[in-house]
Length: 78
Image (cartoon, rainbow, N blue to C red; front, top):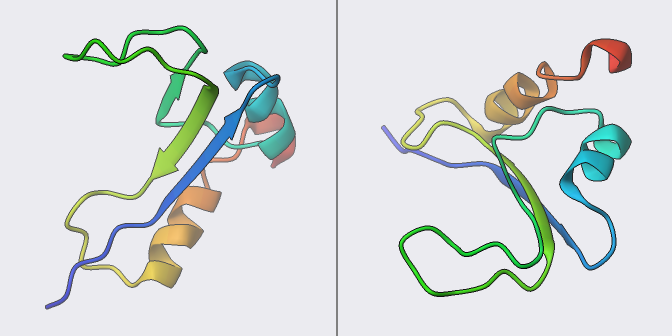
């Protein structure tokens, strides 16, 4: 069976992760701030970032994965 990964990543010079969360209305899996050091590297993040992704190696269709992520809306957005 084929496996797929769905991922939405938003990066911004000005919007911080909390602001992106409020605008998008979804709870992220991963966030970072401009200036953060990327884990296990010496790379400094140049932008704020926000990301949600499906489970790696999922056998669900991309449609199902996107719908599942959409169910993670913030309580006030539901």
